Image (cartoon, rainbow over all chains, first blue to last red; front, side):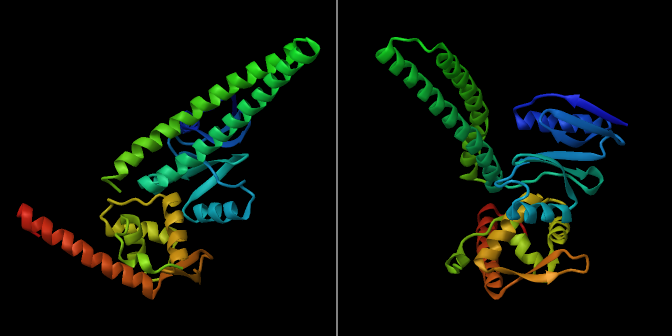
Length: 184
Length: 107
């Protein structure tokens, strides 16, 4: 039996936790597409899930080689959206954690942080362009462009949300770096 | 290819990967081998292993050794990789000797 759940989770760590809770109950994700999660019924706890943000799109040669490598270790990619991949491994074959040392954990977090912060910049720059247009129109033709103001406000709110998403990995990286001074 | 870093301390992952590759082995084999060697203590994550293998390949400490029967890519340690391991063993021996001397812990 298939079960479909619509949900929007912007924090991938929360999403990962939720997928693992579902898997523990016997509902294992087997496809995902922009908010649409499809689960298959399996024995409870059969799979462990991890979500990763690849450095390239899944179809890029670098990613293909990496995903093939993961497959050889028993890790299967069940779904992908843009650069995000949904990976699972059978729990019977041992624990599943993609990154096990501080160095590679930092690298994984940096990829996520960079994605959110790049988007923050884009949102803020477009918001600034909108505001500049508003000011210019006000000075030259004495007209208030409410649509542009609306756009700018929306973009700033989106930007702040993305900033909040990016600050999480940024904080984690900072604490891992401190730990790295004395541990590996 | 830089060989100047042969004397820098290795990470636990790199050390165990290099030790595993004294005989040709594929990725999953390395993970299993490291787990057994370390008495279940070190579980290499596949992402960490992939990154480490690529760095070791770039350094020329390991090379691709073709494909196994199951068509999985195999790797093997090189002469400079073995040199790095020998330096690491010397370093670890120094650490051990000093640790034992000061704490009085028995071997």
